[in-house]
Image (tube, rainbow, N blue to C red; front, side):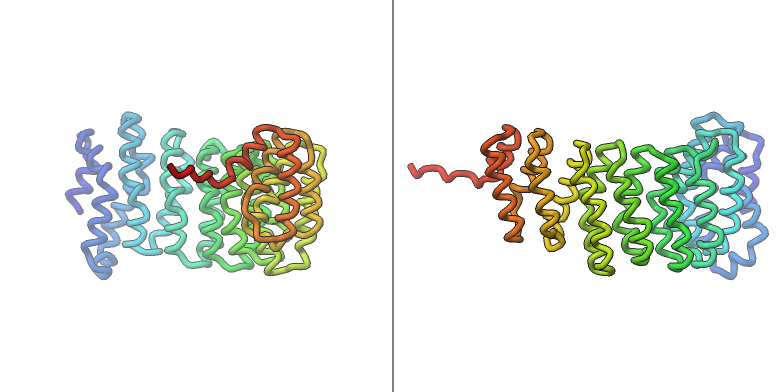
Length: 365
């Protein structure tokens, strides 16, 4: 340990750079080799090593940009493994490190460090107790990874928000509830499609971890807001997963299902072409994965929307109508739509039904 510390503080740059690159590996090797008793007895020396490890962004400022990134990448890819070996007592060191990180003037280095750490936040949170996660870890995550600033880029925020729902799993329902507003306000504050897509991708986890009251009061409005955003990829992804939301509400609080379907009615009856296309995605999601939730109202709206002469609408309706369906009522409406499209087009919608036909058997020779 003394020899390594001597190298890390060396005035010979090549020797110092190599020592800094290997700080994490040396620390991990030491923790893996020694017993807990030896580790605890070595805390004074370990503190000197931790002081180097958790101050690396400041120690590499004099190095070439490429060398700085190499030092950071080689060290902080190991931060979770070091956490595992040392245990939750490492949290104060890590917290100090995150708080000091934003003071660095090297924005590229800060972003690269945060991107590495963001991918490990869920794992690190899993080592801590629920109280520490709620009172310290999550506030730090929100202020240093999820709030845009000079030290927190959109790239970091998008990467970090992907893991938020999995971290919320680890805390109590009452503490979890406090983060409902975060999702709603973030969607309003950050209208960037990658961020919106990250939120849409968390729907299944959010439905799993939040109580029915929160699902109806905040997830439902947030979901349909995602169905209206500018980015088509986000609207499509969200709408195609509507069945998850509908099935959850139907199972846990069926009396709230009409409230959910009022949003669907808006899309069906809107004068906006994009909204009606979204309605077809919402309807198609139910048709393929939750057909028992399709009532006469939805069937009627499907029939009306599919009757439009707009090629894109007709094509989307044809995709739904061509699919296999177990519900007799849905089959009947789909047959009507099929006949309408085969009669009046457009050609690309007709082709959907032709492609759905089984291949003809070749004549025997």
